[in-house]
Length: 333
Image 1 (cartoon, rainbow, N blue to C red):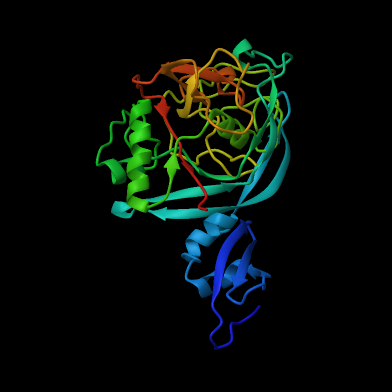
Image 2 (image 1 turned 90 degrees about the horizontal axis):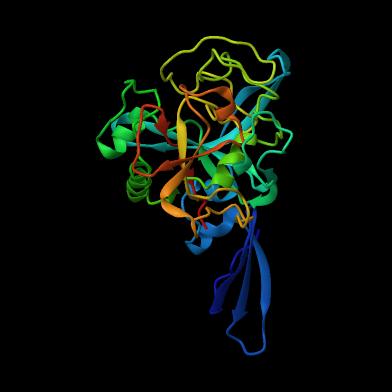
């Protein structure tokens, strides 16, 4: 800690480097030939009137409300072989009409994107596998709900009505417009995820076909349950959406990444990953811009289409009762 003493010292302050937990400044005093360097903890930034709100500082540093959940792992037959406690950090955005939007902090890291050739029911467009460095970001805890969508747009196009159900019958343009309106209302930057961000967030450190493990069961996700993956069991085919958060989350605390509704990504469709970015950004060069990527599968799909690595191309203007989205909040600078 430090303090400026009263006097006639005037200094020019230059921001040299901004890190998540510490800020470094370089200053030059007016007296010729003098130069000082000092460090200021982020909590002291308000001395200069540039610290921003408590919320903005939390967003910069991945802080916020802590929440807890249970992480489940299954074997190839769908039997639960491990249960452990998990925790995460989230920011809660207050929306009109009493709605709220929970955004979970996703720490940056490197992961292997795509599926190995040995993965059951994989498609060639899921390769070649490649390393991707993904910066930290905030991701929707759930797909955008009907209550959230209506609070921002005043509309609810969904076929299966319910405030806590995911909004569906959404085109890619609808999803982009929602992000734009949400950004305008909050003064923050909301957008669709890149494909790399989506898969990184879905895997949450796992390398298996599902974040649950080698298979998925109808007790763990909403998909066409009469079909199986690996040696998993058959089960209930719900034939409709369910309320968000009805099934166990992954290790980041994200819910419904497998099944429920397809989720739009920012990327233009490409037939494989040859030439794909390795920095976590959306791949929007080349390709046919009328086709965009969707991830995650839905209530109407086979389990193989709900895998972490599965990707699907859709005309940007198409919609259906199985197409929704989830949003990214870009950390402030």
